[in-house]
Amino acid sequence: MADHDDHGHDDHGHDDSHGSELVDVRVTSPMQAFGMSRVTTGLLVLAVGLAVVFGVPLFLA
Image (cartoon, rainbow, N blue to C red; front, side, top):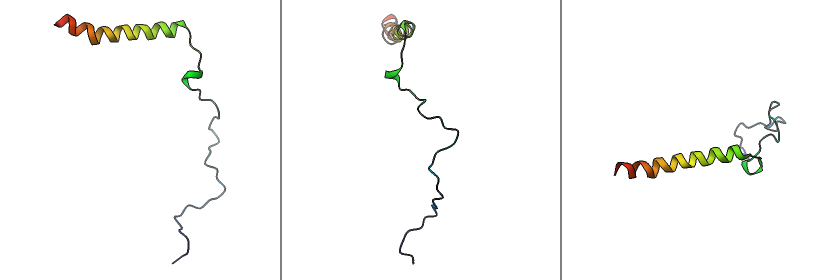
C-alpha cells in the first residue's frame, strides 16, 4: 500500500484554460446600457401577460 492517494490525476503543467477562451467578454445585466425601446418592449410584454392572466378569466366568468 502506498502512503498517498493516487487517483490518476497527473499534473502536467496544465492550468485548465483553453486557448480559444475569451477573457472578460461576458457582461452582466446591471452593467449593460438599455434604451427606451427595451423599456417599451418590457412594458408591452407585461401588459399582455397581465391581460392573459387576469383579463381572460374575468372575461370568461
